[in-house]
Image 1 (cartoon, rainbow, N blue to C red):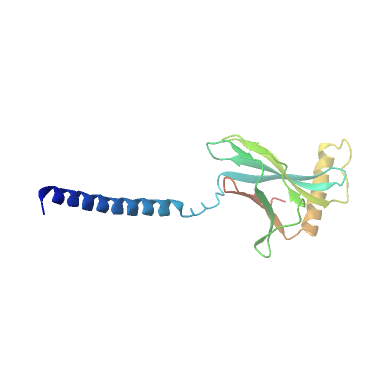
Image 2: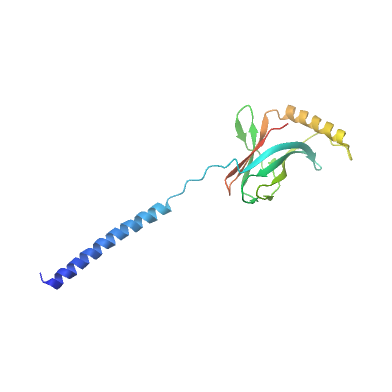
Length: 178
């Protein structure tokens, strides 16, 4: 074989080998990067909730559980949709979903970084007694005590609520405080 043929054959062999190796590396990278990414776990420490009090509202005199939400992160938090709010059952140790609108939170919710916000969990369950108009502090306190006793009778298995916010994968536990 003459010199120039040997150089051409060596060049073609090198080029073919380089193309095969490059294609293998590129194919491996594309396959690896297109694999589905596992979901990050629910973060239950980013937003915390503490029970404040309960009350009633509206024409139907439905129940509202008031909580203080705290954003423990360094970023502002906005919740405008993509949530699941569930009741927690004490005896079963499980969560329960209910018909749409039975329990809800008014959206949007905005909590600046390292700040707190008062937020109500609204339950479409009417309380038979209405609060007095222009009630004094003692009358409001007595009304809330009767409401608490009634809820413990009627919803004795309710152990709070849990909210799953899907965009940030935050889990907010609303503890029972009544």
